Length: 342
Image 1 (cartoon, rainbow, N blue to C red):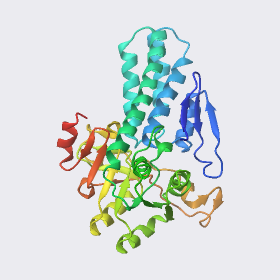
Image 2 (image 1 turned 180 degrees about the vertical axis):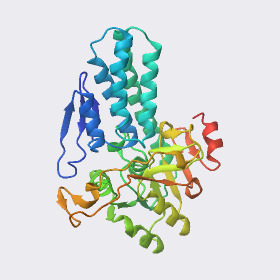
Image 3 (image 1 turned 90 degrees about the vertical axis):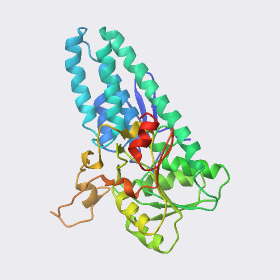
Image 4 (image 1 turned 45 degrees about the horizontal axis):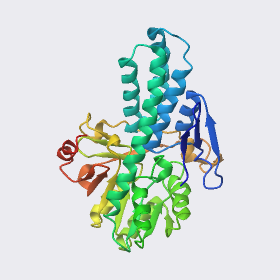
């Protein structure tokens, strides 16, 4: 299994996902600013992986603060936190990590100890995410029937989690169990993460896969070519509304119209019980050049404006169930989250 992120003791090695599928290339980053840039540029992406990268970015930034007094340390530390938190505003995992790291600083006085405990916390966060995705795959694979045709959106495999994957991880696990599956992958904006990353991961596992553009999904649902839809999430509100890659909402509405089960898969670290509904989830707005250009080549007239929201909100009523490492939850979601102690 390709490992997209690895702590090397004094630096972070990441797989540069913007170069896939043409090139498997790694970057070794020893600056929190470089890691923050890599997150913004989607060199490392996927909510769980972003959280892990953010944790190690904070560790590296804190390790280079030379002030010994806690008050002076805090001034620079807060600058690091601001930079990391500004990278991807929608992903809940990142902000949960930031909350954990800030708590470490509050609970300790000695700066040297703070630096050590920050690293310990980052390592434990990574281990927690790996365990969670392993359990998600075990639970979710049971829901996949033999000979299913599965549609998935964006990329939710090991590349997105530093573990076993979420939605795509479930598909891979079911396939390894001997179930005969066929996957339909949407190309997925921004940066065609479905075609470049999901199709690459699936072909690495020899799972039968076909690529379609995002706008073809409704056609194949109407043709009764799809048995189930499985997607990930970057943040889940307390009522079950989910933020996921742009185009997910359209798929969910079409799935309801065509009576196709629609599953959302995410670790509990993606659930944000502090917000009531999806209306409160911030939506990342990315650079218009990602729409008007491809690999630096203009595909729109000079001066053409473009909108580029990275995510949309799927209301809970369109979701068949949310699969987490603590179990499969159905409506009412708030009660379900309470039962698994999110």
